[in-house]
Image (tube, rainbow, N blue to C red; front, side):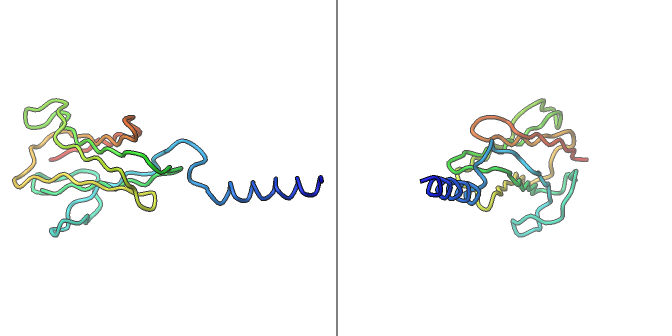
Length: 135
């Protein structure tokens, strides 16, 4: 009887380890900003943008990602073009592939110079904010 309980205990541990990814709270591993490549895709990685970089991209890598989460990207003008702490674009995602999500914010004309921020939220809670400038 003890051998059977030990066997099932070990089996349960192996199955739990194999499930991985949902063993703790969702965390953000990294956020990468990049310019658009001219065809709607992410291009060169940057820490700040130029006004003529009309297409801003962000890629997020998660740790401990669970299914059924809602990821929100909020692009915020902190102090730019006369706007103060104004959300300029919000993108909601209900599906994340391979523990990654991405978003973009696009303007057909030049971006106003100033300070900006990207807030990444999971299920309504901001997990990471990334500040950047347009200059």
